[in-house]
Length: 175
Image (cartoon, rainbow, N blue to C red):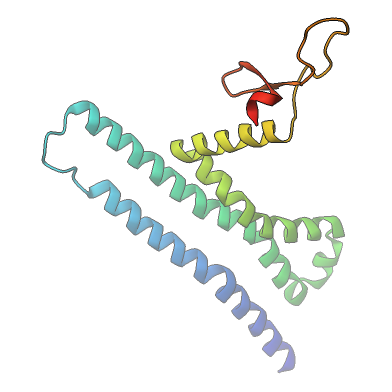
């Protein structure tokens, strides 16, 4: 009786912390995708080029939603299987090297860090903004190239920093 209670408790925890959230986000993202796909563009002057651009954006958004659900499922699946295994497959569970069990734990929590990168990868505006932040931080941290001037010349002693457009700017110009 006691062992059956613990088995049921483990299964209930996995259902409540993995299966239910996965089903909920899958259903909600499916409904969002269906809404986006079936929604007609406004009747006003919509030319063919604007319509194609809008369809392309919708497809990209739907791909992103599918990817988010898939990444959630893949990241959290191993840790939940490893929660069930000791109750039902004790010997096989302890045959798994400890490094893999730690990797399962890390992968589950890495899911939260992966999501912003997915949004950046799929979103053109977010990608552009992230690129600007990257270059701004790069220049602020003075991660520059060619920081030593030639002695005896009128070279600017400040290091030259790389910008997104590839043009050299001095660190003085960036402040």
